[in-house]
Amino acid sequence: MFEIIFEIIIVFLCGLFFGSFANVCIYRMPRDLSVIKPRSRCTQCEKQIKWYDNIPVLSYIFLKGKCRGCGSKISIIYPVIEIICAILFLLMYYLFGFSYLLPVFCIFSFSLLVITAIDFKFQIIPDELSLLLVVVGFGTSFLNYTLADTVLQRLIQSFLGFIVGGGSLYIIAVVGKWVLKQDAMGGGDIKLMAGVGAFIGWEKVLFAIFIASLLGSIVGFTLILFKKIMRKEAIAFGPHLAVGSMLTLFLPPPAVMLNTILIFEEQLLFKLFLR
Ligand SMILES: [Zn+2]
Image (cartoon, rainbow, N blue to C red; front, side):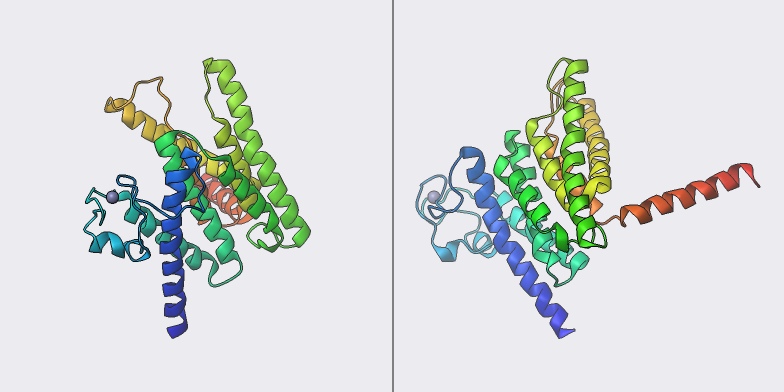
């Protein structure tokens, strides 16, 4: 019991600090700045932020959301991102325990969080993050028991996920452009789902795209209904893809899922016709 509480605290604190780093990435990556140096500065007065004013969530509370130097307002988004990152890390702990897959899927959820925030605000997905997903996803696939049983099967499944994830969106992009005579899908979305596929395999990546499309239609339709956007205006698809991808982690393995659907279908047919 004590051990579990200790692990939860460690994972939560790691989540907060990586959330803090996520904020750095979200601010700097779309502006083509280095995420490593220099140290963080106030975006208003450009004064370097001291380490004790840079503690996740706590500093925001102590400083009452204002810069110590110039008193300008610090966005509430910063502590919110830190807390979301900590919650995502805890969810990964819930799924994988204190195992070698924990850091792997913490990188997965960290990347998706940063991508969601950047795509939402700037309508771009930095290539570095998609590349990170491809490299980590494929590079650790031999350990990833959620993909398949044997090492060889896992490598193949990860590679197929990469191909199917990127490929299916590429086909949608080509067909969409041909039918709608405008860009339906960004290149960033294609690279993102290639990376996601390397983590979750080809069946789940298709399911992630399906959830994302469903979510995107609902959000798009709601926005048009309340006249927030015009009918032809594009909404960022990245955040929907990221949410869809995260949700697939909580689904049972594809084989079990297919089995459940088949059993359900069988029962339904039985009830309808064979009573
Ligand atoms: Zn300042």
